[in-house]
Length: 304
Ligand code: PAF
Image 1 (cartoon, protein in one colour):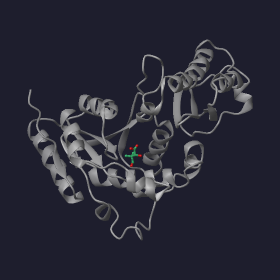
Image 2 (tube, helix red, strand yellow):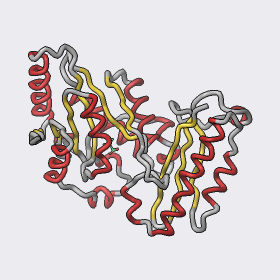
Image 3 (cartoon, rainbow, N blue to C red):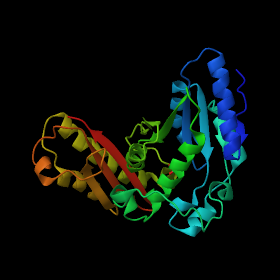
Image 4 (tube, protein in one colour):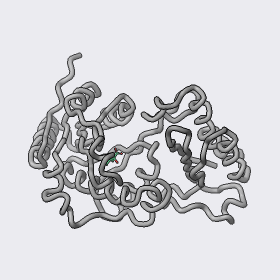
């Protein structure tokens, strides 16, 4: 089967027109409720993004990817400047996964007058200041600002509806954008995409390539600790979070940043009182640790 090349839109007007035209075609062909699946990205796409595109393709009539390196979510200018950019390769990957439209605006189009703009920004509140946000001030505010803009720009005309895909790997980002849609009444259905694990249990990440065999083995402490907690919850036992932290710390040179059990919707850590009994509700375990030379994150839903 030859795949149709994804269409490129570099302006909001072009993207809106392309989406509206495709929606009109679908409606004319008898589809009374077309769905548009949006995969927001910062480009540098690789097969790790594949699960997002596969799920979006399987669930929607039209698949749109956005490719935009968002300066507002970088805490260091040099990271922003050195972020890899290769639109041709990104277009090829989106086409390979069956995507229809790529929205790839430049910075001045997204934020006319940048860096003096945008003046009006979205705050992720307390949810953005904890865990990954604690070491990256402003990061999640930047994510919320760009994601709200992308939803507004790419919102399809009725009767079509918008779904937006985010990886469960970045559990904090997923919880924050879910809350963003609720708090700002943006009519978008957030679709989580499962985290992918290697057979060893290690959560797949582009950073894993920087780990040698010893590093890989040490990194397994993160998923082992999460499984340990998940098993306790499934078995109706009280969770032993200190023992789970020790699993990670037992690996030499691994520095645990945090391992916490939180409410999946608010990211608030569960109280001592709740943790003193077997969990009655689903909770989320979040972990981050430095496994030299990289910092890794992982998470797991704990379901009683
Ligand atoms: O997860 C990402 O790649 C980015 O944070 C996102 C959601 C595309 C916003 O820039």
